[in-house]
Picture 1 (cartoon, rainbow, N blue to C red):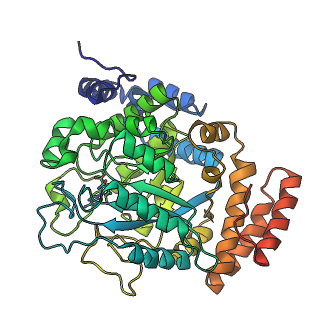
Picture 2: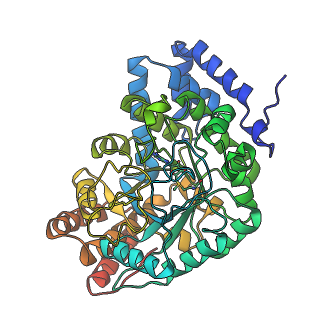
Picture 3: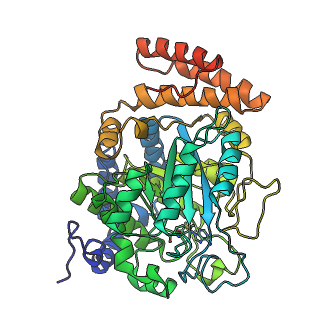
Length: 473
Ligand code: SAM
């Protein structure tokens, strides 16, 4: 008998290989059991989520009518929890020095033709000013793993620098961190530095595949990597972001593993992941994704996103510029709550006029500027939001989740989205974006539930027009 225990603190027990295989077998046996599929869809309507086994049955089901119902439900849930808001962010690459041997990543140690670069604090300032001038308020910092070149002190100094820069009306109000798995002590330091979410992609939950893809370096330790979020939470970080690099291994296995990880965090810490990211492997220097041969069709990718939305309704979902505008347009409505825009994935890329490619981590498929992305989102019916209020008001971890579960988001996030969009329009937008945005704000004020909040928002919007910044509820 195998040992699956979602409350265990051992990677091989809470992400148990046998349990995943059993789950996939159960899903195959039941994929045409339309009575069960209908019951699961009914259950999901209660907005309490689905287990990894239940969700895997839906993923395996190919009945066209039922699959359409999955999409419709995902859209409904997205609207219920996140309305039509989409939070904007940008990645900031600090350093591509790395001692790992990840087969899919161009920063791998053996890659000798990629120039290695680590930003100085002065260079970080330049990057941040360029990002502020675009209108960004929220960053995700990225770095390779290298204890000598990128020690935790470097990351902490960089965070301090980022928060300290106030250029014109600009400010970075939330720094999320995507760095390699580390110790409880270092997570505590990151928490003290005021980070938002700690993000770490599992890459693959399949242990054998993981060990093949990470042959050398500290990241080759599957258990240490998989247990990182528990250490982060022990270090006091209550917003963690998980994800799979889709394309490395079999997507059905990854999907079950991802949900088991979320179940584990909820069972042990009382709060599930704050976000789930769904990156797909991209071509990059010295990397040919066809080597992994587990690539995922756009259609199946959409189904995965819809089913994650249904299975963990309270968890934000992130999509990056790894995806084309066409794919982004399709899947945003199925459950995405955050997207990056105007991204550069090279070290020092924002301060350069031309998009540099030499130190890029992966090829970007959406090359539009932030203004173009904001414009497109609004034309497609979304409110681009630059809000960071929850984090700054201490509404993180279970406090954020209870806000989400109580449905109060509409009276809080919706006005905040409108006010931060207004800041963006006044300070950074092109004329066309401004015009569309102001009309959108006028229309969306009517969707604020309470009259007193409506009035308050109108007053705050006027204040923003006359120069006040950083207003939120
Ligand atoms: N170095 C850190 C670590 O080991 O977790 C994280 C930073 S890394 C810059 C961010 C993520 O980029 C990785 O976790 C991986 O999922 C993703 N990535 C690496 N190579 C990629 C590729 N060729 N295409 C798409 N995403 C890739």
